[in-house]
Length: 186
Image (cartoon, rainbow, N blue to C red; front, top):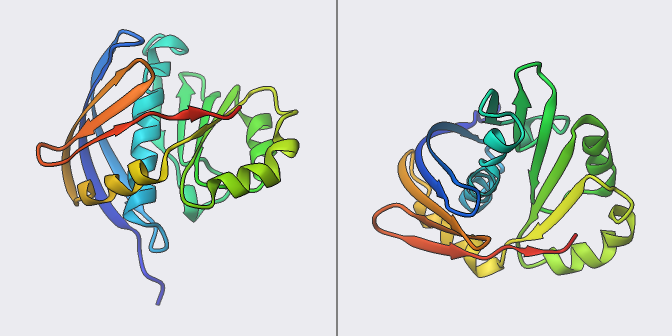
C-alpha cells in the first residue's frame, strides 16, 4: 500500500514591507512521502516571498495556494490564479529539468523557481543555457545553510511570522528564526 501524504497546517502572518503587503494566510501543505521537511519549508518560503503578487497582479481577487507539487508533475509547487482561473504565477522549488519549466512558462504568465541544495550550482551550470531563452522565468537561489535551517520549523501545526524587507525573508516560529537572502540567477 502506498504511503499517503502528511498534512501540515500553517498560520502565516506576513509583512512584506518591500511591497506594502500585509496579510494572514491559513495554509494547508501536503508533504509527499518523498519530500523532506526542508523542501516543504522552501515551498512555504516561496509562497511568502511572492504572496504580494496576489495584490499586485490580481488586486486581491485571486487564489494563492500550494499545488500538487511532487504528486503531479503537471502542477506547480505553488500557484496564483486570478478570478477567471488563469494561472498568473507558477512557482517551483528545487532543481527541475528544463522541459517542465518550459511547459510551465507556456501555461502561466510568469514562472519563478527557487533552487536550493548543495547541488544547485552544478544544476544551474548545466541548465542555464537551456533556460535563458524563457523570457517569463525567474530563477532564484536559496543558500544551502538557510534552507537547511528551515527544517526544524516543520511541525504538523505551525504559527509562523514572515517579514520581507530589502528582498530578504525573515521567517520565525517563536523558537527558531531564519534569515534568507535569495540570490537572483535569472
